[in-house]
Image (tube, rainbow, N blue to C red):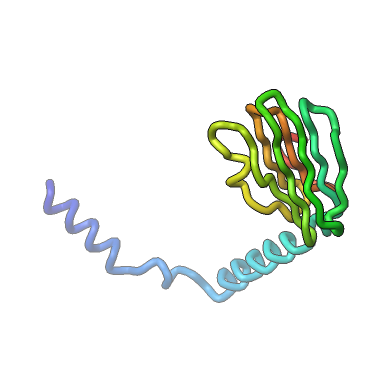
Length: 138
């Protein structure tokens, strides 16, 4: 039984799959790759980031232009969260939360990017461009 299985396996590998593929098949495959790349370039553009939206407990505290460097202190239940804006990007500089996940998020520069400081109930969102949709906004 094992010898017949081994013989069938060696017969299947004796005729490689690429001999079954015709030039027209390669053309269809190349066209699909080009169409996918063109779709990504055309439909997934979000435009330039324009402002940083800071919320505390769901209420908008400030909308900061990304062109003007500045820092903002936002008071929350655990303490003060510091947000910095400079040269078209923004980030959470410090937060009193225990895990520092929003600080580790780093600089945010594209529309739709978000840093959540959940324990302190503060969020930073980059807005602008054509608008961004994600699973939270959808």
